[in-house]
Length: 153
Image (cartoon, rainbow, N blue to C red; front, side, top):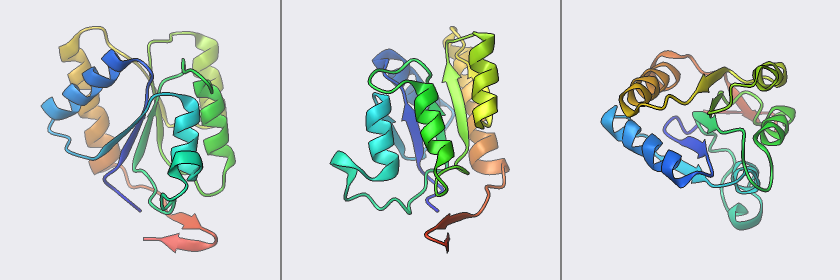
């Protein structure tokens, strides 16, 4: 398993830049793959389209997913990731501005690991990203991942 890669699925360039700045300020130097829409994210994760040459055995350590995405909505991206045997164990944190209770409930029903509303204030956002990164990348014990029946190390 590639323990270094974070997949950030976010269409708002300002939020992407804010997230990357927050990672830098929090000294989280992991590789971040940015996917600007749901279709690109699914192609990346499942090795399709422009990413057909990507080794899909390189499983991201964490997916940060916005709900409001073009082409394929965040909930549909989440459903497809969790429906696939090879990807369903990847930790997914919803990082969104949505505060709809039905979004929160549906995300947990599908199988997210955490739901975080994006703070408006940059310093609060840095604090959230720092805690998020430390927990999911340093403290949390990830599950084993299997690809075609073989354990990925």
